[in-house]
Image (tube, rainbow, N blue to C red; front, side, top):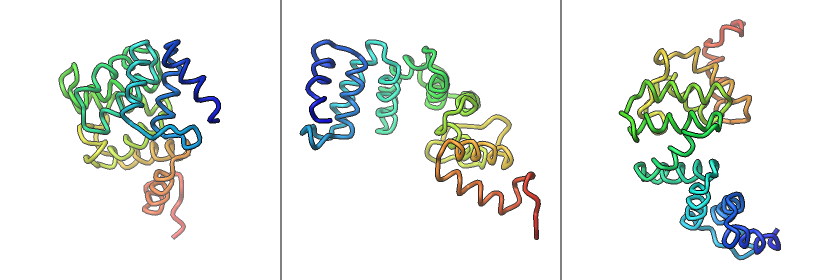
Length: 193
């Protein structure tokens, strides 16, 4: 609600409360017409960075992703460090995956990147599940660049992770499961000729 924004802004700007900073970042990232808050990734990043520096892991994660998506990889490192050193479940492993994928503070290593991506996927991160499934299919472009899945390309493993991502509500993996099943890759589905 628009009436909530001034209180949220006060909590973020005056009280310096990290959760409110993260929420203000979300408001700026999406924009809020009713509250007359323009959409601004730059302003969102300011709030994410401030909250991350106060220990907010989610803000650190969003700051890291913002930098990575814009190709400002080196600038993502301190935020990936915050998440990678936190007890943040699958996000921790995703952060370490990025560090190995891009060689941030560690030697670039596609095998380690793949192992940490798998750990995140196994803990239920649907993005990790989808990226890992694509990697198991042998794709090496985009988010799969710099990632070698454990054991190498494997359609059966790809199907497992496409199914997991589909169960987590992702649409593309649902289609991929159907295609692989139609191609006979799912041993649990008998060919009915």
